[in-house]
Length: 254
Image (tube, rainbow, N blue to C red; front, side, top):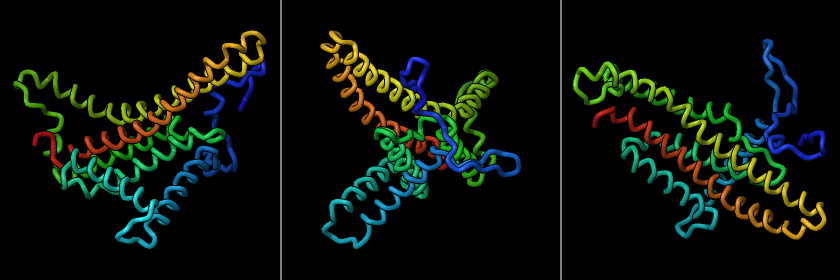
């Protein structure tokens, strides 16, 4: 982490993108960065866990198999509750997004690790993937009827006002989906870094070290809260993905 002029580490230094393998293609910087590394690590951990948990499946499941089945049923129920049985065709997508965001969020809680989801470019890419699938599937299956999504059931004179609002609302979906995840992870990690810094500063301040347990306790409580937020944000991302997919599967009015 970078240090300021006063020797104190900046709370935002933990989010710095660092080039590990410099590379340029067609004039663009395509270097392999620490962000890409931790995304590869996340995918590797997920793949290893699922392969090991499903290897040698039995009627009496092992602990790892039980955990994998809990994740499977949890996401499957989320899809069925929000999209219906017709939406189970999107289960692989929702499950992949949920488990990827969850692991990336939790990896960021480990000291020395990098929080991939604290960068808007990553969360925006995931959000655009979801909205892109919604639009493509909706148009492919419903044709022009998909446009009814932007025409609410209101008196005709109000359509001039409501249609632009519905269009803006739809276009803001990827923004809200990405910013919600990005902002929560960014703000939480900054707050945790600041409170942790208070502990060291007070211990080095002589008599003020007597009150150092206060920020220490706050840092511990904030860490527990951050773990909860990491799990909840992965769940919220999966739920909102299902809600948006519901429009593509069933249309606007069903």
